Image (cartoon, rainbow, N blue to C red; front, side, top):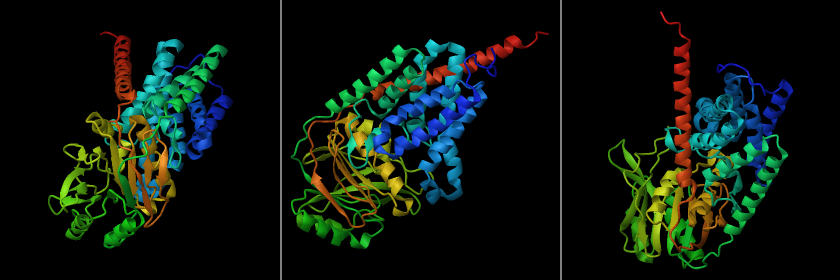
Length: 463
């Protein structure tokens, strides 16, 4: 059977249209409304059904179309940031869904239903992990697991890790696409049991002690920093650690800021530029101590593509603070699991995240970005304090619950609370599962390529 031949179990035109519309509808409902998060399973079921289209080419282009109609509206703020260049970026994000549909179609065609059902969850996870973590245009926000994370309420579904959740959801979807009623029942039971188990596992007691951390949202207002710090100190005089956003300063913290820390015997974390030359710099979070000296600094690990965001960090280290080991992620660093994996592997007990989300990127961009912190906290079982330039700042405990939140745009808004630093974080299950799935996916693609070459050679007439 050639790659262009039809499947014996192919869809009718009407079925294809219904699944196409259903996939797009379920995706938007799941990502837009917290109450409909569970509909992400419906999205995956529809996508899997569409893998039965008559040819690999159709599967690919239908997947690309679903991706564009699903991702582009959710990423409309790309137009505000990049202008017309947003169009190829939307296409790039969508290609990964198209590749999944293509590989799923070929798996069912070449391996048979049972073997294909076993490998499909690994194909999804492998592509998702590679898209999110391993290549230049990596982008993780639409990993399926993020639908269970709320910017304001946190998450009760993070113990597997965000990629582990995706894997589990595809397993459920695969079971639900089988025609046997018993498998539908198994899929439903697995889904319910896992949700209940996750809720139970997140019902862990949170320590009500720890350093008082306070932050203030300021965007491109360096001249207001001292006055704003004084406002925070007056409102929360027992603050142990003050935090400002990424790029608060166009340089390392200036003398007046260091003197303020020395005068009040306090710690401050703030973002600034550590210039190497007039054109090269490191996007850095600086820790100023109670003696007015810089006691620690961490460079951004993954500068944003297409932005003047500095050179990438050459190393990641933990700040041995008076309260425990604290890891510092700068803005989008928190979106990359491999960055946080490294900090937690070193023994991080909490994360501080200075962030620059520009106000004209829009509220929805801020809402999507704010899904990350609750999921990371639940995955690694560590608290996170995230201070953004224009919202949405968050204090999240080790269960993924949001204790405090500052609104968008929230100019000058203050966020404060106790950071419950206790035990070191732990790596989630998908720390090992996701790279394994990526390897499985790569081997499957290699097998397809080699078998295609061998088939062509066998069909070539010998002279």
